[in-house]
Image 1 (cartoon, rainbow, N blue to C red):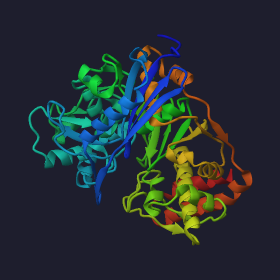
Image 2: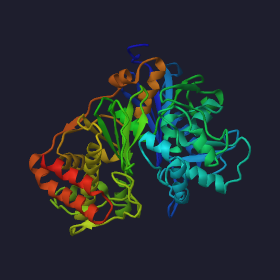
Image 3: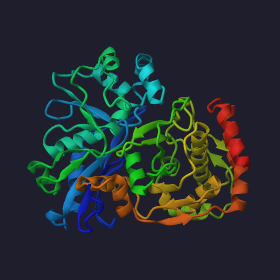
Image 4: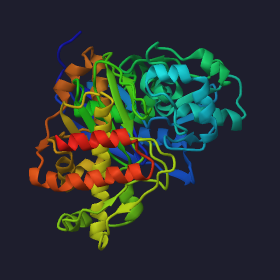
Length: 495
């Protein structure tokens, strides 16, 4: 296996997010040569959230064409795709969608979750996440099967699977990262056939699955014509968007963590062994190199800002908020109800602690609320024995707000790093570089660029800790957070 990347080689990363598709071209030194994006829209109706899968492909093709427009064909060495976790659809034998895509946070399958958890209890417990949530892919698959006229030869596709199928011109294996929430057994490296049969999942419906980083095909002529990706470009099996951002941040060593603040908050770490969570809110992906990537995805995050302040100038609000010194806290759920991590509470709903005076203080309360959830995530991880003492990086759109990042560092009471260009698409470019015969760790060492390090202000940390602990105690009072986790948070704060 090679030890180095060619500086002139170009690696293409493709990220399918909630609101856009983004393509980036990155060279072997980590220089971002080009980037392009196209918007995505969805439809929400109560707990339902759908997108048109065909729009993914047209947006991806346009973004790739733009990103590669000034790059010679001979330089492009690989492509990898990430997407939202748990987003699925049914397609016919040719890969044409039969259904809309049920998005990662679609909650319509609540009526199927109990059956999934009863039938698969032994498998889910062994894998460490204990139970599947209604928004996970397997309960949603049962809902689709119940409400769709499924023809012979139909296929279940994860969001990334549709793109790789179109790129290759034929069905490609799925990756174990996207397949996790559909019930793939990461320990045995197979689908749990007996449990799936008992749930009524037809034979042949699910894709073959390989580890992330595996070569799964090459770009066909038809796809090359619409995407600009050269014919024959190797395709590497990708990962979910949270894992992709973790790769982009270089958070791959034991105890390292990456906190991705986008519409929702996602924490991803690295360790030598899978982490088992008695509460079932932390689950582990398998790393491309064979280690484990524990983490969890909250229903809170930066989406609370667009929900509460639609159309506002967020930069101006940040500037005003930074001068308030306010300590009111908003519990920053993006939707109307339900939390997934750092605790599971289907009935959780937003609330406010304190009395914000004016828009600037309310905005600051949202920023502080996300920081509180983030610290509680890390306290929960520490409580269940996950290694959390390594470096912590902040990525996602929220990390571009420097005041917010400093506030998060102060509340956490630990130093954080803002990588120079970490994002999910860049993480996929790093993973795509392994098509050149290099390990992921070596690719990351060559391509992940150092960024800014922020150190906490001890005085501000001391002032904010009682606010955080009050937030934690309120979650217990409402019956959403286990008292044992709150007690651990208090102990950590006292150290």
